[in-house]
Image (cartoon, rainbow, N blue to C red; front, top):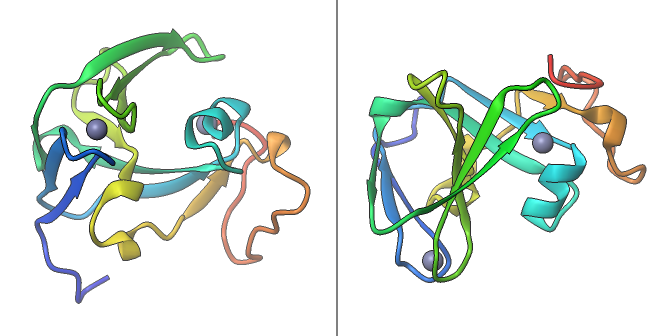
Length: 138
Ligand SMILES: [Zn+2]
Ligand SMILES: [Zn+2]
């Protein structure tokens, strides 16, 4: 990923929420859980785990809170106008956020390094052999 220029900008579908990602993600994952299928309206969601101080947000975000199966808090931030999911976070781990980074202008950074919740994966989707996969949350 040496030739990628930071910052990379992103925005929700309507443009009400904009953000800048200042440096590379710590990790990129594809999550196949049913919750992610709902939120992405697709077979899986792409999550970039990033240090909280490497993203700058602009515009109003609203919050929805739920508990993960593990009991961890999984809070979601989304655009109140178009509903596009922007990021997830756990208030007990304020140093990182899970950016729903498919709305970046350069999505070439979003190649998953791991596939998680493969136990709920759509049968037709085949994970490349060289990428680690986990039945649930590793
Ligand atoms: Zn929006
Ligand atoms: Zn998930």
